[in-house]
Image (cartoon, rainbow, N blue to C red; front, side):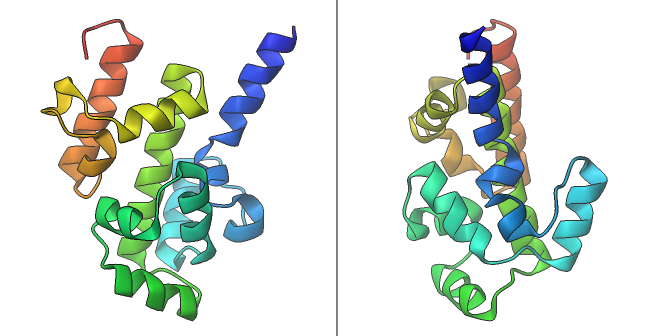
Length: 153
């Protein structure tokens, strides 16, 4: 019974909302795609950047590269307090992929390691390095689906 509790707690710790700082930062508890759309449209609080950096274990410059957002822009947004719609969408895309990887690997830390490591199925690059485009994010999600179903990935 304790194993199931740990697994559920681990997955909750890597939910998309938690990756972005939870209700404290988001000022909401998004549960559906429509909730996320609303948050993206209004702009996510810049504190979500710091939350993602801490959880993923990368520097802000690496996060900026992964999201294809200039580092100076991220620094400016942190001063302004809110990301614009496009930047918010990119950050949510990262958070949702982290959440999905944690579901597939049933371990958030293993998921983060996988996201940062070179992957043969993705041309030898790390999954996180592909998240700067929608097509790259789709390739990562497809690879996660293949792993989940036991197909070589």
